[in-house]
Length: 194
Image (cartoon, one colour):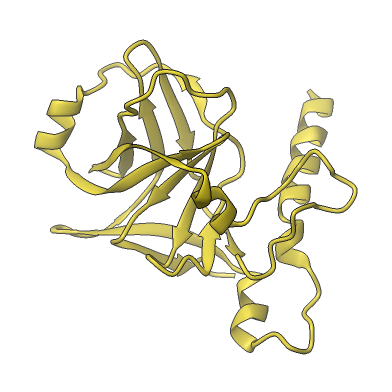
């Protein structure tokens, strides 16, 4: 158990390395601040601002869930490097690189505090990660939740038709190799209290 906790901590610290890079002289104050921020994700809807708690991929035979933690890392896309020092296998790709080779998966439906994705493809890679470019459509920053989609069981999972009736379309999902990209035009981010 201790080994598992150590591994999680090591992975989490490695993934936050781009946030902790020292500021350089030619960065603006805003860019310096972005490196330290963690944020919460909201979607504007007819009921006001909805705090998003999870993203759910609903396939015909399986369901995958990625729950959002209290605070999500906000990455400045101008400072993303292709490699993280000492952790060659952990790479963070620029949003522009991810979007270049991506394919459309389908609509994202906002239902309650969840983002539901009904992929139009059945062959999805294992250990899918998530990236949310913000603000739309500039993509100067991105939210990169730690972890990946995990298989889950829901007591009742809506069909796509039921989700469309009960929820609203919030954007479009794209697939880029092992990353699901959520394009959310009505997404808003707020820094957490530090």
